[in-house]
Length: 196
Image (tube, rainbow, N blue to C red; front, side):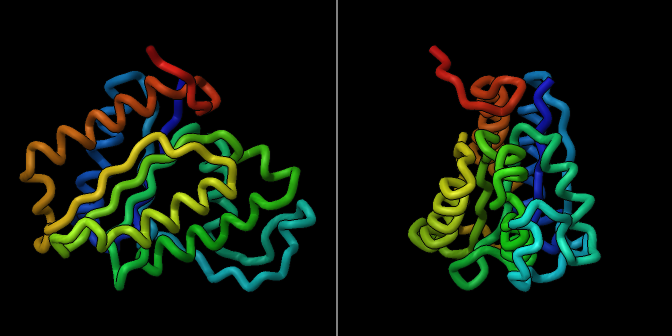
């Protein structure tokens, strides 16, 4: 069975990011995936201080929730990264989360993340789609470095009120299909395969 993890980097549990991430998970579940959601605002993730302990294959030196979350990530085949655009970047919650992916740098841990699939959910207030470019680039470069595969993305401009995206059928339909397609493209290890 394919396991999909939705990661919400917004502090709002009923905001646009959460609603769209949930819709991606719904589509994935429809295709037989087991889904789980993680609200970064509910956990304690301390900043990475570059001690490089994890680069030597040892457990992270930080005593927080991330050591438990690593185990959830390891069991997931697809990860949905959801963040609104804050000052043309991801939220502080999401940035701290991604910073701790340094754990996957060493050979022992790299195999735990390599070839997993990723889906991006990026809502933002500005109407100009270019407002999300730096966030998309941040994820694309990070995923490439981690040897993960980008299975799909949805950028949602012009959402200014909490929950507004959930009222847009086109957005919700696209998010649902992203979840379906991510599972169809992934084998049990999360590897992207060619689908005719």
